[in-house]
Length: 520
Ligand code: ADP
Image (cartoon, rainbow, N blue to C red; front, side, top):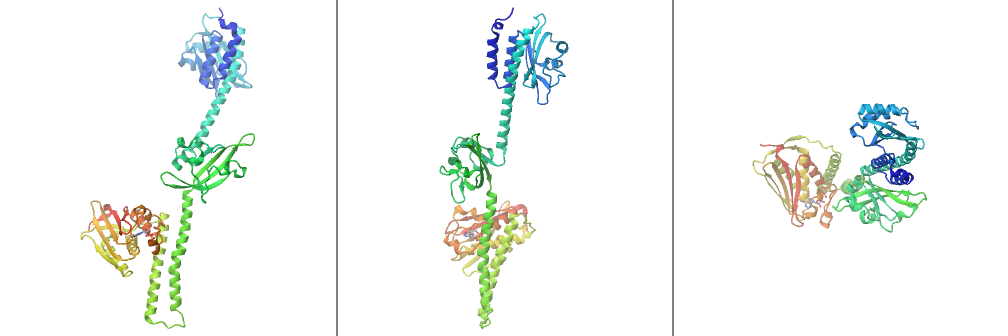
């Protein structure tokens, strides 16, 4: 007896077609197609094979068949050319072979191509078992109508899958891009904020998306103009197409990052801008190098010029033919020239060392050094440069030798003593000494000078960093001395730090690891 739904076949087909067109998930869709087709034809089992990108057919869904035997039905679809659009040839023979290979007794099959335009997407097979009625021509026609609809639905599901895959690829590209990427709409609301940008700015994707960019990224140009500011006309003027901005962003953790930011507009078919893609690049390194060059030039022109003009002035005066200078005047003049030449020499050495350190070319020549002797020698050589200061050197008698680079350690000690002199303009006691700890030795230089506020204790060791106040401004300097001290000490595996309060003097400590020490 024919099932009731045969009587309402058209209604049923329409319903299935609607259900199919709303399904875009391929496995769900194939299941729906098979279930409907088997019911429609009062079948026993069903199978769909689909063509992959290389044109090869393979089983994609089945119903009423043991899952593990499905691959052995392959004689049903083997050797069918990709451009074959009609019924499968020798279908009875193919079914007999498949039944024999699998042991599943299927006597009847109706098979139709899933054809979309010129494209064969695969086949649908509906089976009946032994003793069930044969498929009729009308069954074939019903399945043909159904297969056409199913092919369209499969085609749409493929397209949908493709779109999803492309979107996933695009997301992966955006997420893994080395540049920060932000996408904003015409109202400056952020819709995309990739991982790189989250790392650069310290602002997470969750915190950024959905917010106006001026609330999230406080990007300012060098002149202090706010780039994402509401009044900034970037979003409504074509003048700003492909706008390139360089600015900076201050992170919550205090780190300031220099950005290069390129905005590319995206237009819809009507030529209206609907979003901006901002490519954000961290150019802090470049900016730092530029700043460094500027500082270096300023320091060189300022610090080198002064001693050079003093030397030139004295030399010119002493060489005047119309003057007959007394012996004392000539001596005093030559002493000034020598002192200024020494200053020049120190400055040039420091500059050269700084550039070697920066390029990683500092090579250490280790020898056994008695630090206590070195400190005493350098105090003796510098004692003559000041009449206001007294020196006290105190080392334990068993202070060990260390393995270090003699010339570099000499620079460390003279820089620290010079600073102690320079930054205690009213004179006072300068104490130097050493301590032996479990695994390390320590060296200290203490003065009774102007002191250093705790907030500056770490930055004074950075290149070109000088504390800007009236007291330090009086003392000439390049801000390179402590940078060199730190770099040399660290190259020896040690550390350096300062203990100080403004107006209370300073103590600089150098600690070197014991491994380098050979007990004397
Ligand atoms: P420079 O002395 O050429 O300026 P340094 O790198 O040696 O450069 O020192 C950096 C800054 O640290 C100095 O400008 C000064 O502000 C501060 N400083 C260094 N040593 C002392 C000290 N002994 N007492 C007070 N301030 C110091």
